[in-house]
Image (cartoon, rainbow, N blue to C red):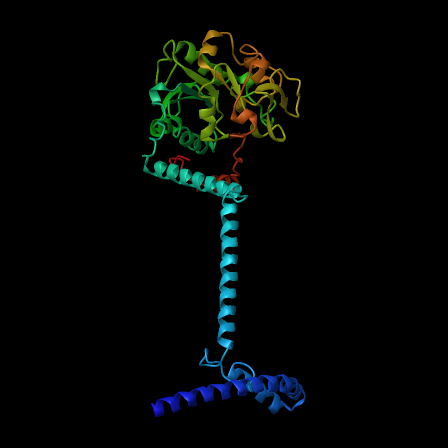
Length: 414
C-alpha cells in the first residue's frame, strides 16, 4: 500500500504541478507572444525563419506545450482536415452545378443541326451519284446506230459533161474516186463527142461505179471560137439536156446501164462539172431532197463563196456580186433537184440561148419558186464544194520535140 499510495500521490502532485506550470505558461505566453511577434518581424532573417520553422515543426507557437490529442504537432492537423473538407465540398458543389447546366442544355435547341443536315444531304447526293455511275459502268454499251441499207437510200444521179483536153483524164480520175466513196450513186458521164472515146470508156470501166455512158456533140454554132473566154458562151448545155432525156425516157446510152430509172424510183439529180472539188458530205446533204435543195459554192463569182442567205430556215436572198437580180443567182454546183420533180416537169431544160449567167435560172424557173428552195449545209453556212479549175498545162517543150520528131509516145494515155 505504501508504494502504490506514494505513486498515486506522486502522480497527483505531478498533475498539479503540470496544471500550475500550464497556467503559468499561459500567462507567460500572453506576455511573451507579442514580444516574439515583434522579434520575429524585427529580427534578422535567420531568427524570423527559425521562429516560423519552429511554428511549422511544433504545429503552433514554439513556446506552447504539445497537444496531447495530436501526437504529431497539435491543432495544425485538424485545420488541414477542415481545409480538405472545404475543398472537397466546393468541388462537389461545382460539379453538381456543371451537371445541372449540362442537363438544362440538353433540352435547348442547337444551332449546329442545320449545317449537319446540309452536310449529310451533300454526302447522300454524292453517294447517290456514285451509285448511278457504278450502275452505268455495269450497264452494257448501247449498240451503235446502224446506217440504213444502201437499198433503202435514194439514188444520187450525178450528171457530168466532159470534153477532150490534156487534163481530161486527170479530172475524171479525181472525180471518180470521190464518187466511189458515196453509196447508192449512179454516174451519168456525157462526152462532148459524136461517140464514146476509148479514154473515157476505159476510165468508166475501171472506176467500179454504176454508170451510164452518153455522148452528144455540141453544135458548131454554140462552140467557143478560138481565143474566146470560157464565159462568153454556155458550155455543157447539150450534154446536160442529153442526161435529162435519158432519165425521162432512156435510149442513147453507149455504155454502162442502158435503162432509165423505173417509175417510182426515189432519187436526186446533181450537175457536177469534172473540174470542181467535192466533199463527200455534200452528197449526203442532197440525198433527201424533196424539191430543189441549195448550198454555198466556194471560189466563184469573184468572191470567197456565193450562196443563199437563210433566215429562220428559209431562203430570203442570195450572197452574190454579179447580177444579183437574176431569178436564181446560184452556181451550177450549188443545187440539186428531186428526180420525181424533174420527171413531173418534162419541159424543164437548160436553154442554150440564155443570157450569160442565166443558164441555171433557165432550168430552175420551170421547177420551183425561190421561196421554196431547201437550204442545206447547216442553213447554207458550210462550203462543201469548190469551183476549182486545173491550170492549162504549157506544152512548148513538147511542141518543140514534136517538130524535131522526138515527141512523147502518143500511145501512152495521159
